[in-house]
Every structure is written in C-alpha cells, then in structure tokens.
Length: 254
Image (cartoon, rainbow, N blue to C red):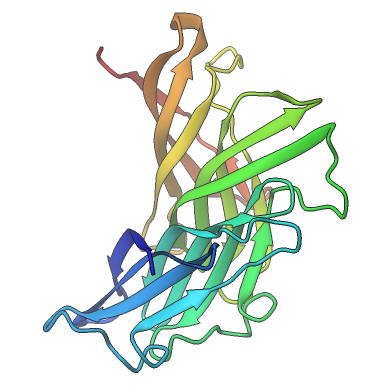
C-alpha cells in the first residue's frame, strides 16, 4: 500500500511530551485518504492505542470526485489533533479540516459534522463549466482558539484560469465553524496586484491576541514575472474577523 508523509509535529500545551505525529496519505484501490500516525519519540514505535495500530485514516470522499484526499497541514494541541486536507470534489479541489482525539485516533464528533468541516472548491450536482474554483491548503497553525489554514485559490471563468492567490481560512477550533475564508491577493501600495502567489506557511502566536503571520511566494508581473517572497500579518479585529496588515515583499535573487 503506497504511503506518503508530508507533515510532522509534536504536541504543544503539555509541560512534557514524548510523542509526535506525522500526516500524509495512504492509497488503496485507487482511493487516497488522509493518514495520521502517532509515534513514540522515545522508542520510535507506533502508539497502538491510536486507532488500534498507531495510524488513523480520514476519508472526505465526494460522489463524482476522484476520492483523492491529501494532507495539507497538521497542528496538535494537547490531545487535539487537527489535520487539513486537499479534498477532491466533483469538479475541483476544496479544503477539509478534521479533528481527532490524540489518544484514541477517533474523530471528535463535536467538531463540524462527524468531526470534519469543509470549505471552498466546486461540488454542485452538475459542474458549472462557466465558473469553477480550486482551493488547496499547504499549512495550518492556531491562535486564540482559531485555526488558520493557508494555501492557494484559483478560479476558472469560461474555461480560462485567473491568477492564483494566497488563501487564508479561519476555523473555530472547538466547534468547527468556518469563521472566514478568502483569497488574499498581494497588493502594492497603489492597490495594484503583484501577480499569482501561494502562501506556504503560517504561524499563530501563543497569546489569544496574537496574529497569524503568513509567508509565501508571489510573481511580480511588472518585473517579468520575477518570483519574490512575501510576508503578511492578519490580526484579530473587533470590526472584521481578520484584517490584513501590510504585506512585505522581498525579491528573491536570480
């Protein structure tokens, strides 16, 4: 059975912990599911109390889709394991988030529907060929009881692709409510956009008031599509769920 591992992290929130988790995918009979494994940091052995053998798989299967779901982020706080996934919908890809019990490996049914939530992507009964949208996650973090998922958003309008923009999605870590998600174009001070970009990493601080700090790459269309990197800060706000700080773009040397 083919396995792919993409993420690894330890638990935070405990004074002492000896275990860590890895996430990826497992493929069987043409169906790829998200895979989470719990491993002892002391012996390297699987923690068999975690879903019976140390490995738990999560299926976001959609009718009409390819059933290929891949890990797109991993975050563990105490006994809560959060996994983000790129989910195959009937037309495009969306984002799925699941919450597992870190001891037993079972889905926490208080989170979303049966332990899972989804957002983005296109999954109508009949695919709308005039407009579809693909959303893919690359990383996950948390701050103030909220999960931050970053990645990319790309749309097809009348079969023509628009630019790819960074994604920021925000999910309530307790109940799975989708608080906010949208594409976040990287803009200059004159409000024009740089070009296509993807957010690759996100960090949420330890304080409830800490922002999400996001980093990724963006193409500078005004400079021949030169690949630059960006950082951006999204802070909690009383008026909006999150508002964008000033993006800082730096050129990557040739």
